[in-house]
Image (cartoon, rainbow, N blue to C red; front, side):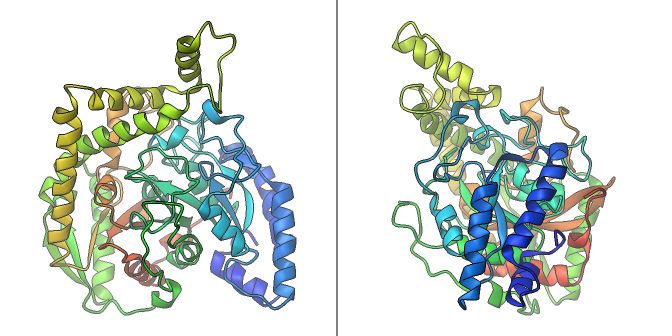
Length: 483
């Protein structure tokens, strides 16, 4: 059962080959057996899962149907879940139980999805390795000595290890796509505003976006269908009709114009990943796509711009965690200032503190124009590059990451080296574009992904291309040894 995709589970439930309750029990037992090796879950919700599974079985018995009805999933632990710990991977929120469900959680529950638990993550989604979590690092199931990517590494590791078929995740600078590449999954960051951020604990509000992590593009289409849609509670949510993503999966790629930016193939890219990327391009050419070289000239400025904007927004968003209203509070403070200082100093980890300080500096008097305002101007230039490119091509293709997953601890003492691993992913967040990573091969036994980018609200096009690619390749079917 644990090897089934979401689509296969939906067919099996519809054909009454098994019940949601039976499947849920199998997966809960598998999590209990195997997750101690991975540390991919922060909280398990056995009672909730079994009650939701029984309810889903009853709904099917009454004639209801749906691809997510009775399907087991998990939520990244920054989506608020009513009455269940929502920690954001931080000591600051270790004791926080959300009083309401995030819109994504509520929508998926209404569709009949079964919540198995909350997955581990970099603290407040800040990281590219899933090593900054208060609950310890997550291990990559392909090699337990390597990182699974971050910040959605818990969701990625759990799905890759076949502990469950799919999970929710979030992407601020590549935190869905990079873990997908490192663990041989398909991960989709939707257009900014396509998926509600209400009830999703914020890192950088203008960059954060929720999306699906699964083994196939077909499964991502199913999960995104349940997540997407306008939400009046979220002022950044876009009132745009949600298409049937599954219906467009089988469209022909004949005549599809694929742009390949020359900037993606610089000295920083592992040549073996470059070769696998070119192999993917050739595979899509065989399916009828046309390849066109393009340029994104301002890509070189994206990382410095991102690492001004994101920390600036983080410093503002995380100011609410002050030891007064909710979350961690230090013991026996001398006065209010001591309460603030010690609660934040003890409650936040090193990476979060680092980004808060960078952000506060960039927003401070005398430096706002020099750093934050200039970074926002660069953001506009990055967006303009994409708009010009999409006048010539339908999608953009390149590597998801410059290197395969590194060993645990290898970059812990050099944050900048870790930041540079986001070079291909952060531009989509700066521009608000949809992006998808799909499996494309292996380097030294570790998975590698290629990234597809599309114009706004063209998630269906990305899923179509990835699905057609996966019908003609088998990278996504590979399973890590021991799982």
